[in-house]
Image (cartoon, rainbow, N blue to C red; front, top):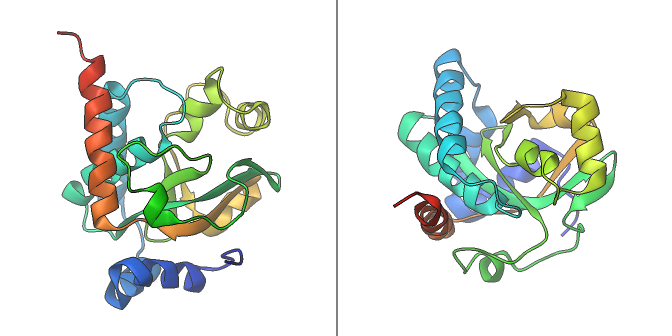
Length: 197
């Protein structure tokens, strides 16, 4: 699959999993203040309970998506692909992958990146946590520190604007509702394991 360059191509990925009406809603969505507030509250709540562990972008994104779907009328989709910093991949390798096979597990072993999209907006709940950790790629850590500084929790921006900040979200696969539910089960398991008895 060639790189997805515009919202129309990304809409086709959404349509492949969720149908053309979902793709149309995805492409036309505009975030309002109520949605921004709901998004912020959902993210804060999740960041409070989800442990700081490496490689949790899929689980965190699924958990956030499920929460957002309960609080917002926005078209929410979980997307997988490559994350690049200044054009260089830090997660993923831009190579095609078998999405249904990768996301058949509740905690996939995969080197790409997963994020939420609320319409044409990237909603990345794991990027700062990963960048601030010792396990995060050095290039990502340096970039995040210079571009955003410390103590950030959630990155939300128009997909088209992310490249202006040196981040490239390169979608390759949109997860199905069943795959998101499966990942949510994995997220619940991780959260439950870390809660004190």
